[in-house]
Length: 282
Ligand SMILES: [Zn+2]
Image 1 (spheres, rainbow, N blue to C red):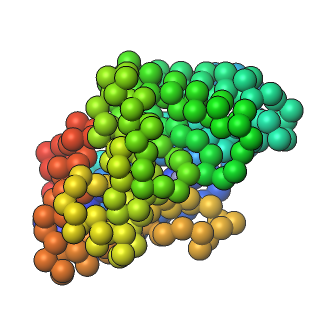
Image 2 (cartoon, rainbow, N blue to C red):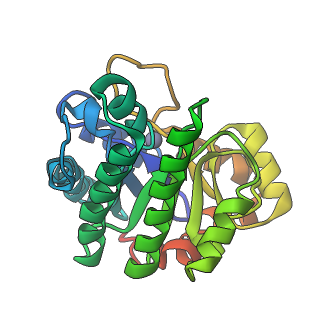
């Protein structure tokens, strides 16, 4: 049982109690010194839901809320749900199910509306949206940006952060501008799967050493994540649940206490308004 003198937060991972490791992954995280988790719902189609209305997303979100409740019992800190609609859904709808981009947009916006109800009710911490990371038609790109804009509208309305899945980039200035137009503070736009730095938002840095070194060196606000997908069919596809605690251990060995405080105390407070120290019970 590893223990650090600091909270240790994984800002983006998935738990699939029915098909994956579920709470066993949480135990691995906690045994390695992890304290807090932001658990993002799995894409609706991976849980076998063929969504047709915004309401159809509700069971997807409830699965996450439930596993988060159980995970919190196992953690010295706690877990929080982050709920939203995976931007890849647009292609499932348009390419596989014959939707036109506008109808796909409307369904995805309706799914985000359902997610926002959980945030308003205090059952989720933040929202999740984005746009495809692969080449799409102009119509699909436009529809995706409209969904992302709706995510920002809801983040403004719910006074919460918005995690984004986007193309691989270190510049989201366009999104930062849309956020500013809606009164959403720039730091509340969080790019998941990020490099060590980002213009136009807060990077949630994938926890490999090169990216972390970059983030630590700059000293700007950042978060750390694994994007553990908890998918038994893709065991090596992403980092495992022990990765963030191990990288914290490494950062501390390197004398990077400031970076650890940045990613695990200061930036969670700045972005989500959570106090990871006060919610630590040991
Ligand atoms: Zn993810």
